[in-house]
Length: 557
Image (cartoon, rainbow, N blue to C red):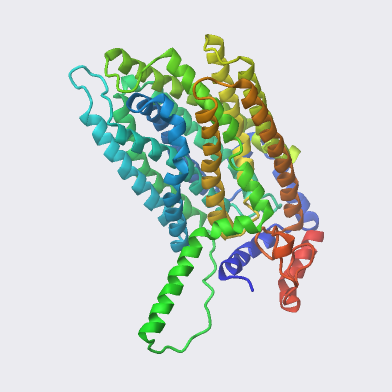
């Protein structure tokens, strides 16, 4: 028996299947009209209706603010942690991230369950929560500021830890929240059968990277703009503006939502205290299950397990490279923790600026690749090609750093920074959007609940594995042989899973199937006994004939 959520997803997807149908001369003329659009017209979403196009522009502006502020706040977060705590404590801080993230993930899933039909409320609550944290940090950075000397002070270690975890959890949570919404509103197709995701995702990524460029430039010139205090204040203010932009996009999109499925009427009667207590416990148990329902969905669907793996597989080589990148920056501009000397505070600002300029290079490269190549790569090579580019680049990057050895030098300094830019560009511009497209053909529960567990906790778990490698193997000195062998094996597994998911997604598109609906994507042993081998439910065939058979006819046509 399908759950109410599944039924709602089915109702929402039905118009999309109808809209994607094309026949005869009309369908051919629509396809020709789309193919005749210029590159600029495609990037400005001319294939969409006016309100849909404007909605995506508002969403892109919201992503502009979110990613821009993240690029702006991450450099001072790292430099502040090094100056207030210690560079050597970074792997330890990353190790504790899963513990910090667990209550945040439960809270996020609770909000998604409570406000399932109005995700805008979730966005507002999370933005207000993190804005309050940054306002508190901003006030304390102003309190320790050396107003006479015009230099930043040393933030209290406890606040530096809070600052670090706020920025690092936000950097994972907010993109997941944004792309979950985008996967939900982009599950439709144009009249010629082109998915909204293929049309709009390149423009969304472009908007986000444009914001990253502005944010990186602000952080790179932090010594002229008031330093860390002004950057933190700006971050807090941006989190109050972004929800307004997202709300405007929602109001223009006007996504149809089916009314909630009503259960049978039950005769009301007064319950005894024992019955009321039992009913209350049952409801609490049901709510607790909803908090982990996304994890259950992942375990039941091997395709979601595959997405769970590749969602953050890049973090193993990248976190290893990040640790080396931060180490060479600390070597070039030393600012030891607790050092309040003018030279150390000046070096801290230089570290913040350099991290920001690296982010700027990442954003420029990502913008160019997403604007020029994302759509053409996906259209010509499919998702499989888009998903294997990142593991290949990551392997080449880690092997390049391994070839430089462990002794600090200018050659090693620039090698680490350059390969990091290449890895980040391919991840953000190609691998990330392709991974998000894997969720388009899935139910609403999977898009929000399973995706949050996959992207958030998958991110933190794999970052923790890399942190343990840095903490126990590469802490005192980089071990190129061991790191190279481990990353090579890791990338090999990553490529196999990525190629399999890419081809599976192509099959879903051709067969007009949805992961999580009618046992599609489930382990074979967990499928309904009355289901066929193709995962299409055979229960109530006569009742479903009115909807399933026309869709099958349109697919055949």
